[in-house]
Amino acid sequence: MRHLHLFDNQNLGDAVNLANFVKISLPMKKIYIVAVVMIAVAIGLLTNASSDVSTYSSFEDARMAEKVVKVAGQLSKDKEMIYDPAVNANIFTFYIKDMKGEERKVILNAAKPQDFEKSEQIVVTGKMKGDDFVASEVLMKCPSKYKDEEVYIKSEKGS
Image (cartoon, rainbow, N blue to C red):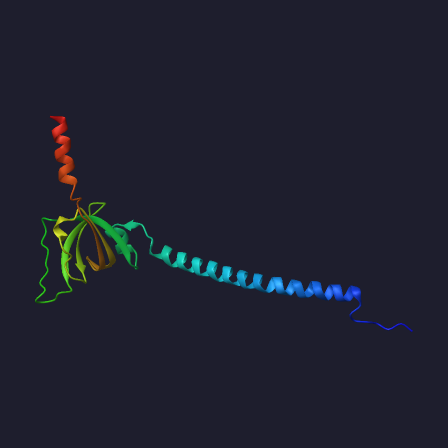
């Protein structure tokens, strides 16, 4: 009668191969797990960041939308700007004319930004409330401090 040996030469070789495979694949599995987690985090961050990327709307679009939008426009310098920090330092009202030419009163729930009157373009983030646009954020594009120098240099060359 023949006895079955679990660890004969062939079975021993298979066992060694299996042990080596486990030693190699365990660290590889950790690397794959880390890579998958990093990819998932990156996708999550990109998805979150893309929700903030939006196109500019007009006041008409803001009236129809019932969500927060960004409206770009020009400050109406001929209209009054009201900011009285003694009464409420977190309310500033002004008027903007959007890219389609519609002019609306904007109520900013924050302090008046420095050099606000000098801005060339304004982007307000908020919602329409009645006829007014209630903004939670404002972004200003201010003129370049080199703009006057560029105009001066160009006018000298043209003379």
